[in-house]
Amino acid sequence: LRKNLPCSRPLFAESFNRLLSTQTGRKLQDKVALITGGASGIGKAAATKFINNGAIVIIADIQQQLGQETAKELGPNATFITCDVTKESDISDAVDFSVSEYKQLDIMYNNAGIPCKTPPSIVNLDLELFDKVMEINVRGVMAGIKHATRVMIPRGTGSILCTASVTGVIGGMAQHTYSVSKFAVIGIVKSLASELSGHGIRVNCISPFAIPTPFVMNEMDQIYPHLDSQRLVEIVRNVGVLKGANCEPNDIANAALYLASDDARYISGHNLVVDGGFTSFKNLEF
Ligand code: NAD
Image (cartoon, rainbow, N blue to C red):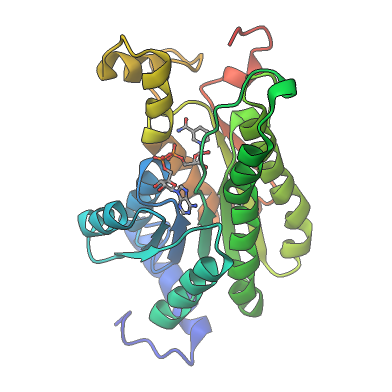
């Protein structure tokens, strides 16, 4: 019945989907989500969670092979599209793909990002590296929002998410360039929320602390080459202060599901920190 709903009756379809999602407990029933950096780590966990809650997910990632494997693993409600967030045309194409293939885009999750090893002193700042990190972590997010809103504004609805970081909440974590990029992501969310609320579009971000994904584990491997990977995962999973919680990508996916869904329908311009209590402890040594 759902598949045969006539497109010319969107209000009926909307009410029907709401009823269906209430009955099934699936919070994103028939929503279409585009996730940048969805091939791995946090993006993959969010894609899995969204699909399990009834969504169709487009994984937009620069890693073609991994992206295709991830989409295959997640089943028929996942599709992969090659997308480098530094190329505006790639982002534009991914958004257009969502509309041509699924008639809509309900959720845009600007999650792609790269870490950055910078020397601890500003005196040695590598400005070329700075530009590269900003191009992915900041400009890529702006471009994602620009093109998502191009199709969301005419529909008067949408949910935009971004992945920031606790390094964008507190400074002094010895990663100037990365930290600046994540402060900017939170700034983007705060800045755009008011304009977009006038169009029924919510914009929020999530700030994780350390989550064991390739992003963090590659760095840990270089810092502690003498420790085996299992030990490194244990260190990362216990870095928050909430003992026994053992953080994992799914903890961020849970936050993403909440913010993307109608459960958070009155929340916009918010940065949801998911850090096992880390940022609430002022005297923590890092
Ligand atoms: P990850 O390396 O597992 O995933 C990142 C994904 O982004 C990869 O699939 C990669 O191919 C993709 N990507 C990189 N550059 C891209 C580009 N130019 N265009 C499109 N895709 C690109 O890492 P993750 O931990 O899942 O990271 C996801 C987000 O979470 C990042 O924005 C990161 O800054 C943020 N974050 C991670 C942690 C953590 O501890 N893992 C903490 C705070 C914030």
